Amino acid sequence: MNKRKKLQRNRYLLISVLSVCAGVFVWWLVTDGLGLFRSNVLPSPVKVFQTFLKKWSETKPDGATLLQHLAASLQVALGGYLIGAAIGIPLGIFMAWNDKVDMLVRPVFDLVRTIPGVAWTSVMVTLVGIGYMSKALVIFISAMVAMVINSYSGIKQTKTVHLWVGQTFGASNWELLTKVAVPSALPMIFTGLDVALGSAWTTLVAAELLASTRGLGFMIQQARGIFRLDIVIVGMVVIALTGAVLSAVLRYFQRKFVKGGRMG
Image 1 (cartoon, one colour):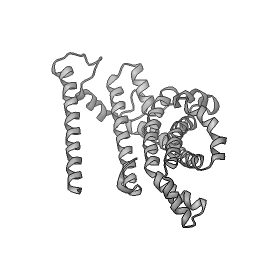
Image 2 (cartoon, rainbow, N blue to C red):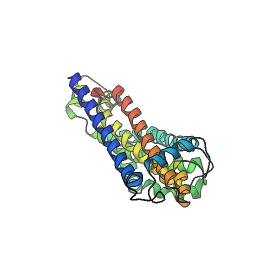
Image 3 (cartoon, rainbow, N blue to C red):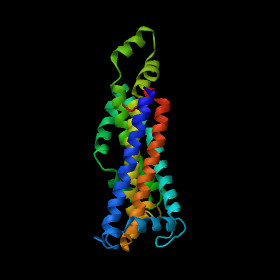
Image 4 (tube, rainbow, N blue to C red):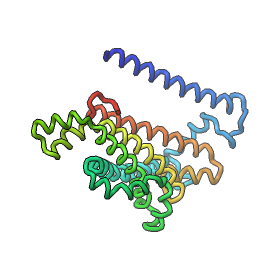
């Protein structure tokens, strides 16, 4: 069985690599290959790769290197994301487990969850100004919503028979929560972490377009203003690769903590 899973994983990896290579080839074909698009309309992959290499050491035209922009974005994204997890997961668990907590929190949460995370940017800039705190708060709200929803759903999906067995053996309410409900909810909790990660990363870039002096979103905004589409695409590629790496790290911890290594 393990050999079969390994073969399937390798096949999926091969197909993924081939599809990316095919996409890059088509991109090159319509730019440098056939000249269907001018470089100021759609830069070729060769041009984008050259810009990618240069941007690691050059601060022009936005005042920072690619690494500095990436570090600024990661600092904000991970800060808001971790705070969102620290608050959102316990809040979702206790809302699902305790009806009084649910009745108290749900009305406010149902209002907050319908508001796109990026919509909070202007409010946070007005309250705390342009800087780390405003963006981190926007990320926190965006990430927390997904974590609350999935943690709540995970606890609610706990099988009643498992709770009955725990009660039969004399487990307290706290023991039922921590030893039965939470372990069974872990797949859903990790799903929430994964969804929240994508939401946080997307919201961060959007927030940086409006309220930042450094970061990948800021870099893209500055490059767009001067029609440097090669830098814009570099920013997009770095965002995609960074998101993929963060998701891979999360899946690693998922395999360590969730039985079977699968998200529910």
